[in-house]
Image 1: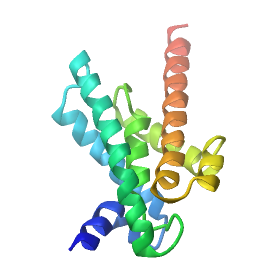
Image 2: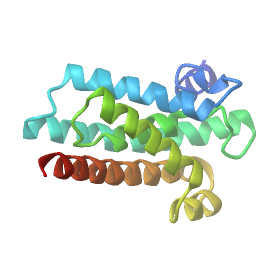
Image 3: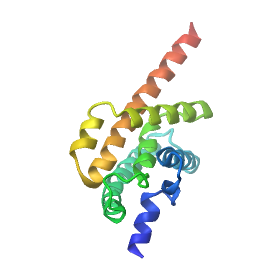
Image 4: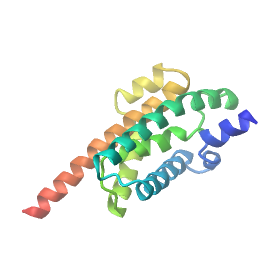
Length: 163
């Protein structure tokens, strides 16, 4: 039963078994969860922002042992079926970002870009840190980079539309 729960969580409800782009599928699950979260919790007041931050921290910390155990179950380093890291990364991408279909789409593209290309220190983390921490933390970096890039795009778009 424990292995079933670990597989369920690590594969984001088994979407990690997708034969085509399982990481992308995991990111889509993460974005759906972000969207649902924003509909359940008002993130505009300070209390909502703090709640979102706490959720990001809890998800990141919880994903590490889940990914670690899943890696042992799948018996493969950073198995493609493990996509909980992509879902967590989506939460980080949209931290303090106003949600719209445009920001969700841009954030999704940016998240996949940074996850696939693994700019430093993400590549270093993936290559040197083993187990669940390595699986999750490189995607954490991708989520942070995506958040920064999305903020820059929003800022530049606003500046251009004002002038």
